[in-house]
Image 1 (cartoon, each protein chain N blue to C red):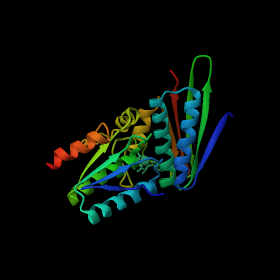
Image 2 (image 1 turned 135 degrees about the vertical axis):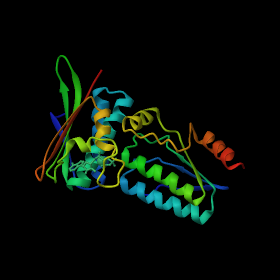
Image 3 (image 1 turned 180 degrees about the vertical axis):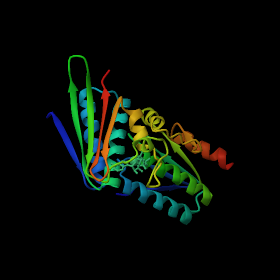
Image 4 (image 1 turned 60 degrees about the horizontal axis):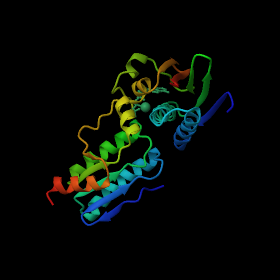
Length: 133
Length: 118
Ligand SMILES: Nc1ncnc2c1ncn2[C@@H]1O[C@H](COP(=O)(O)OP(=O)(O)OP(=O)(O)O)[C@@H](O)[C@H]1O
Ligand SMILES: [Mg+2]
């Protein structure tokens, strides 16, 4: 696999494309079925948020392979409206679209590392890692 | 893409076999409600054995479909949720507490028989 593989998110079906690619990479890296499902679900949440709130963007995957640790990193970026109050969107149940408000707090629990950078009218970058045990 | 809905006596049976995108899920919600209305079915089993991921959107659609069917007078049972899917749902904070479930299609059907007293 190349250092980084990306899926552009422009249409609704790209959400499915992104989670399938992510799951394939996770399987190939040796993640078990439960972690594969966690990774695919997290990708689905991030990709849908891009589609819904930013219109378009991309989700990229990177294999982390060092002597101490192996894992899979996903980076979701968009140039959308940005998130002003990060504390608020990380609360369970907070939504501006009549969703469940489960996506972002869910991704934090599904993955091992989670980081969000966002600026109003500039865009959002969310990075999450699952370690291979 | 459309999810097929089968009628068996008084029940509707659905086995979701494909990767579901958001449109398919919404279309399914509409199709099921109109099929309940047309057929006057009193029970529905949705089998999820082949479903590998349920994210927050699909969970919301499934939860809504149970509530809406209930309003119309039909009981819905979800069956065959895979272990990995159950675990990711809990991570998402989704408990589907008021949703009747069963291990497999067969047990789903007997659960309907019991609940509907037929
Ligand atoms: N990429 C993004 N750009 C701008 N705003 C975002 C982005 N992602 C999330 N948000 C904001 O954060 C809120 C919470 O997102 P989250 O994914 O947790 O829940 P949701 O999308 O509203 O519902 P669910 O994911 O359960 O269907 C969203 O309603 C939206 O306002
Ligand atoms: Mg979301």
